[in-house]
Image (cartoon, rainbow, N blue to C red; front, side, top):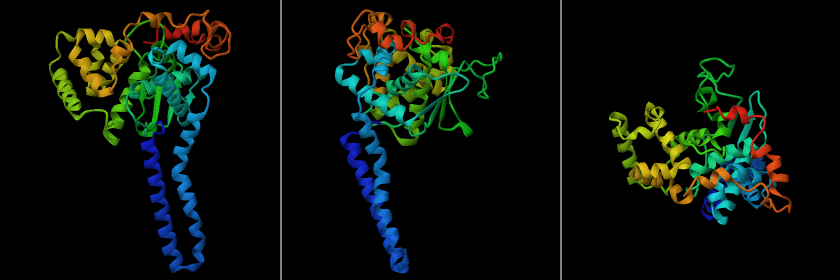
Length: 341
């Protein structure tokens, strides 16, 4: 998602190739029909069209990070707080690019900046260990006011139990997330559920199948994972009581559920199954157990009376925390978020 020297060179090569193809085609047509010589003017347009996404991202990476978004990350996202300063800079840039390129729409519910930033954080956390990553399949995230059914409807029916889904068929390229469940996944209470990370883990798996694995993922780890999942689903281990039964629905849910554990409770996963933790560490190219050595500080968050990290000079409670709602949470959905999962 970020523009690296490698992606910059690759984009330039693609732009030059596109320009040469257009020039060759336009030159051939002009030779046949001289009146078509204005087609040669398409050459610079082709170059700019191919270069535009890369240049746009470079511009966004240079922009200052909004104070409100900084406060939201510090109030809600433990993963961000655990990063060193270089990691925080990279995380901020990824948030900026994601929010610039992916539309986030509320369906019968408001979408404020807190929801937007948490969606972006959900997307970035699973792929933060990859050098060059794009969600090619994703174009829009729909935020629902509550759970929904298999037909993507949310009317308060008894069969509405789905908290998140990557859309299929006519909703291809769309992800749906329950607003209360999204907030609950980033609450200050420790747990193993994060619907945003879960659904983006599904998308990571789909992207890897269609566009290839990131170079950081060793093939040996992939082979070990495939064998491990096949063996575990065929003959579930009686020791695996700490894994949700929902994970055993199929290999895709197994991956997404274990991704939740890896990014929300890494120490617990590492303690109960070191081999599984090591396998996930290789797959995601991240060591969350070292990054998040303890969840006790996650419950505390930033002190309300501390100086606001945005640099305003005011207390945190009177600045960015106030912007995200009482106690750093969206006050309109606090009650529903507590029962979202």
